[in-house]
Image 1: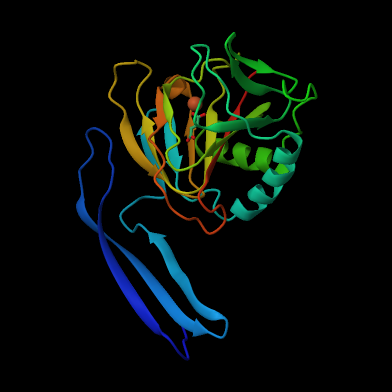
Image 2: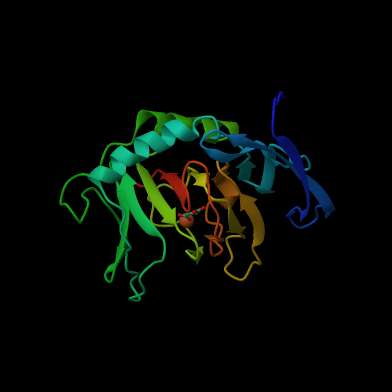
Length: 261
Ligand code: SIN
Ligand code: FE2
């Protein structure tokens, strides 16, 4: 690091990492954020040199048999994934769906690929046409499909060929209640879930509704894959905390790839 002017600031924060049942609890992990503040000609600029270095957390963590968290797996591809997102959402805008019970979801959703997940007063289902436009959902970008396949392979599920990608947008306060992904025809294929933007607390339980879910912090570029004995695990997202992400501002985007048809 070279700085001809300005000064460095070192922030030490204490954290607690979230661990599954039977794992050792580690308290007091120190996260270090080293920030460089410069007085630039056009005003003060704050640059995070090292963002979110979690030295205590493994790159790959088993959440349950069949469920794996791949930390940072999509981080490098993040900007490219987001560039495609704009095009997909221009063709199929985000919308707040209504549940069969009449509740409007706080998460805004859209889809790409041959099939898209929708909810209405008449139920949850996959549709080949976007009900808003009556047109097919936009194609799934090749880079998205390839990333999902690589993540599935890394988690032990070969030849993953998703035909549906649900796009979820969370703003501060948005949440997703505990649920199972069970509207797909093929439970032998895993679910691949890519997190972008603001961090979120992911709740991941068991296939039994009364199993107590564990909590995991998901950050930009993290990917969770669940299949096999975990395919029908209950999962959800706690209300999103406010924040500002370099690429997505006050948003979290989640891409969930499935074999639906
Ligand atoms: C989902 O269950 O569809 C989304 C999960 C997430 O946003 O991480
Ligand atoms: Fe889900």
